[in-house]
Length: 211
Ligand SMILES: C[S@@+](CC[C@H](N)C(=O)[O-])C[C@H]1O[C@@H](n2cnc3c(N)ncnc32)[C@H](O)[C@@H]1O
Image 1 (cartoon, rainbow, N blue to C red):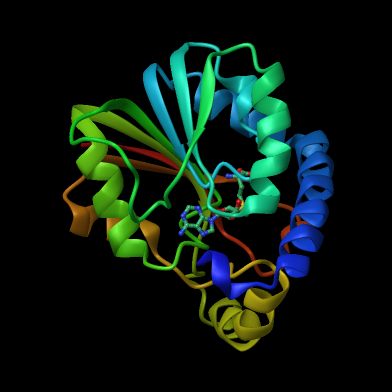
Image 2 (cartoon, protein in one colour):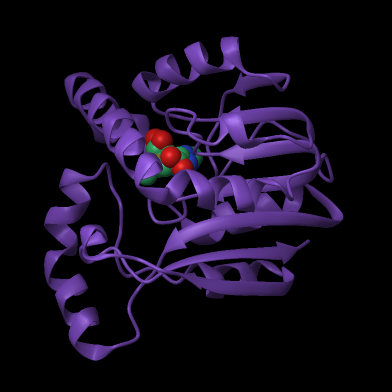
């Protein structure tokens, strides 16, 4: 999603809604998913699409965290969390498709619930690969297109409205295929248990990949 794809008012409404949604889902168990994924985030970490900073409290082994978040309203909430973070952290300009960093800059790249929303999934995957050191790790959590035909048809039907409601989020994407196309290796994928509350945004997977 580009900055221009939502009105300024839309930005603030979605950011406020997303912050509350995050609080609810984190309390309902997603905080544990974040904590377990990010226990493996080491060294210099780039997080793409950091949103309202839900991952920040869980960087316990990182040296420094760099956060890319193109939405100005999300970034405002993020800035308040960065100021209180236990790990050194800074917000950067750019997007998942184009970050301001040199090749081979990071030990870890993190993307949670972001590949569903970026404008160009292949470019975002290629950019994550570019900025990772050879052998560096991408950690991700994502909801993906359903394999089961009936669930898939539902996703396809509701996706246009879903995208408008949830800041450009797609329901039918296949981020793992994009990571393969970008040249990542050693891709691991684990399904996460999900309840009905996630609606059509499932299955949800947690994974890692090596640059
Ligand atoms: C569903 S939220 C996830 C936020 C956060 N990662 C989390 O786990 O709570 C999706 C985020 O991706 C951001 N985003 C959208 N398009 C982006 C892009 N092209 N590059 C980077 N981030 C993007 C949105 O602004 C939003 O903050």
